[in-house]
Structures are given as structure tokens and as C-alpha cells.
Length: 99
Image 1 (cartoon, rainbow, N blue to C red):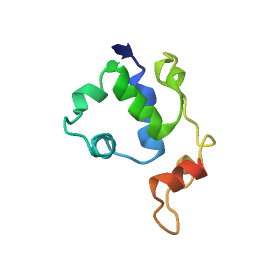
Image 2: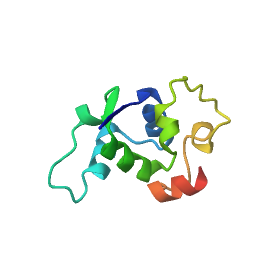
Image 3: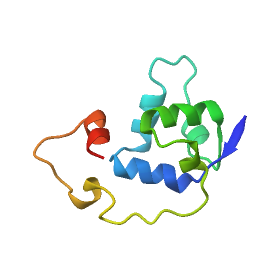
């Protein structure tokens, strides 16, 4: 079953966590026999099972991805938009905790 999403919100999350498209695909395809392609993820309509995997990673809830209103990220929304460098490189889990 396909669901229409606001792709800008997914791109926002990628920029927030400083991830590339390929990084997201690597995480989604870990331990999978049938690989998920970029065309399946970065489209206006996405399979519900793929959206569930994305939400397991970011934990924003389905309404976040489906909401058609545009996001206006401001520098005050996250420490990752305010500060470009840290004393050490944070992994994804650490970034989630900080955010």
C-alpha cells in the first residue's frame, strides 16, 4: 500500500542528522535480501512498509511525513543547525539523544 508523503520533510531529517541519501539507504537495506532503491524512498508516494522502517529510524510518527505543510527550519530548532562542528564526531544514536 502506497502513501503520499511530503518529501521535503524527509530531506529535512536527512539534513538535520547530516545524512546523505546513500546513508539512509544503507541503514534501510541492512540485513535485507531485496534492496530498497532510492526511487522507492525519495518519491512523492512511498510504500507503507518502507515508511515504517524510516520512522523506526527517526521516530517522528507518520503524521510528520504525511503533513503537506512546508517546514521552515530555523537555526533555533536544533543544535545541529546552530553548531556546525563538535569536538568529536557523533554517531546517529548520539545525535538522536541530543536532538
